[in-house]
Length: 211
Image (cartoon, rainbow, N blue to C red; front, top):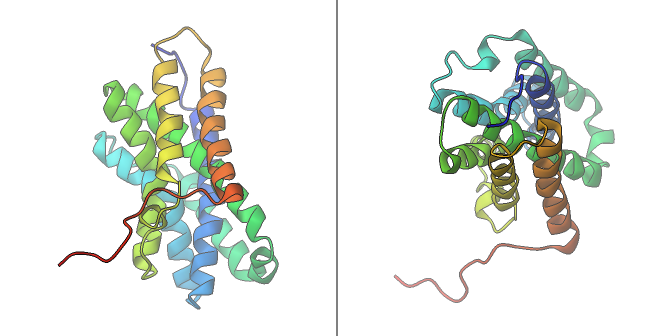
């Protein structure tokens, strides 16, 4: 199995992913014309939701977000930045999408590796890597009264699952964690960015729905 020290590299990746996800969540709140509290709540839910769900499922309680002050400070700062500078950030939508893709790649790596560290098998670890990446976005969309993006044909969950699978497979090799993380996260990020650029969509039903 891959030998890593999650207390340093995984925390850094976690915090980076939380920040970019929290920015995206805060911008959704701004567009919904929520007040500053609503913006901060959606920023926190988007940034922390997937990680908290993962920690609960692997019985790592209390979740890291409730133990380490940095996990709460990062989405708070991101939410305030989005609340104050949302006109400028709104014009940077393509850049925000890029950041969101990087957050997805970071989270699928950390989620899968933390699941492996908790003793889960390959399939559950890969699934938890995906859940870590998409969980916060699903919670955000539900709270904002939207159908979650992952259910509307966007190629979002699939790249996250693919990246997590790479991390799981890599854990059974002698490759350094940095190489495995870069490969898995990179696959997820590139796939997600290509899907945005090329307007790739997951298959959706066609024709009228039967009753």
